[in-house]
Length: 125
Image (cartoon, rainbow, N blue to C red):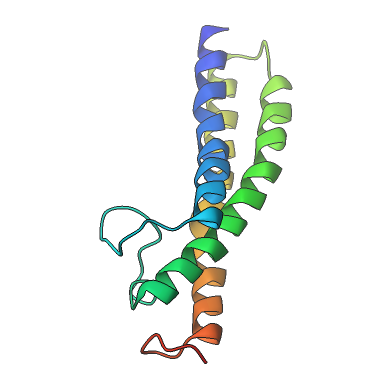
């Protein structure tokens, strides 16, 4: 049971991070464009306007995906209570890899939205 609790906690990290940072980014991007914290791509770092837009857009995606993956993760994890350590570990690993799809995949729609809203120099269209 101890291993199951550990895997549950680890599996809840990604959805909770998506919800927390998504909510934070929707309200406010980091004050300064920086290379350490935030949604950092060459397009998002063109200027303050692209920086703020990218954070708000990515934040919405993360927030929604986090709200979707959190209950799914909880349901899946509770469905494997009492299974073997190997089974719990395998299912937990699969869950994490599935959670990483929207976590990392938000880059594609965010970059598309940036390119629709701004030209290659970061000027609003």
